[in-house]
Image 1 (spheres, rainbow, N blue to C red):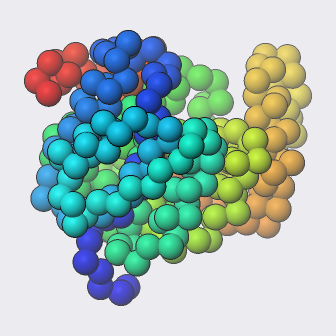
Image 2 (image 1 turned 90 degrees about the vertical axis):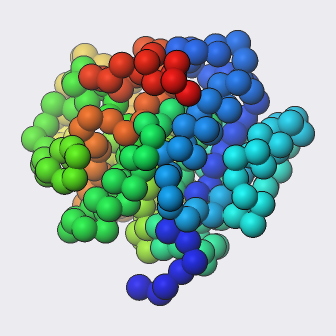
Amino acid sequence: MIETKYDLSVAYRIYPKVSKTPPVFADDKYKLSELCLKSFINSLGTLKVKFWIILDNCPDEYSGLFKKYIPTDDLEFVKLPGVGNSETFTKQIDLLLGQIDSEYVYFAEDDYFYLPDMFHELLEFMKNNNGVHFVSPYNHPDYYEYHIHNYKYEVKPFLERHWRTGATTCMTFLTTKNILLQTEKTFRTYARKNYDTSLWLSLTKYKLLNPLNLLKYIFIDKRMVKVFVKGWIHNGKQLIFGKKWKLWVPLPSIATHMDSKHLAPTIDWEQHFDKS
């Protein structure tokens, strides 16, 4: 692997409106953004990180927020005119594939809260274990509550926690530039109105290969019918001929999505919010 200047390259996208219902600062996106950004910086610890900040129709004060926490030499801004979720994700792909600063790349969204000095565990897990292609920082409660996650999964102990395989995650995740290049076509379907659930299931090959699941979903979960169909429309070639990629998740979580209905389980997040 080519020696690079940075441990990690991050494409961080931010939008000045609140999505979902966050557990704090529900009416103040700027304060929510600062809380999340500060937690991310604290979680990175001593890692050397290059940042690309995608400002999607953000007021000028948002640039100042990142300059407050990130050294200028490690920071670049990309300003977009309110293009939306799928287009900013596409820009993340472009930036991370185009950079030469690190082999390890991270897709970051503005509404995640991280635990301090723990992000390095994601990198170490990926570097020191075979069959680790993607790592999410977020132990989503859906893994334990939603029927599509009823499957056999692998578990590995490593460092301070256990790690399990998952079928899907959100659009905040760690991978390598090489793996991103191999899976680029699948991820780019997100900009063509594919669902995140559909593209992840196409990569991890859970559920979508069994036509009996489609029949079941017709009766119990109409949303999953759409997920199933979109997976085949957009990623049929990957499902039939492509590699089965492995997504891993930390137990307990290293971060949580700031959605009050879906905070990562077993952690007192309110306590951590208060300390930040």
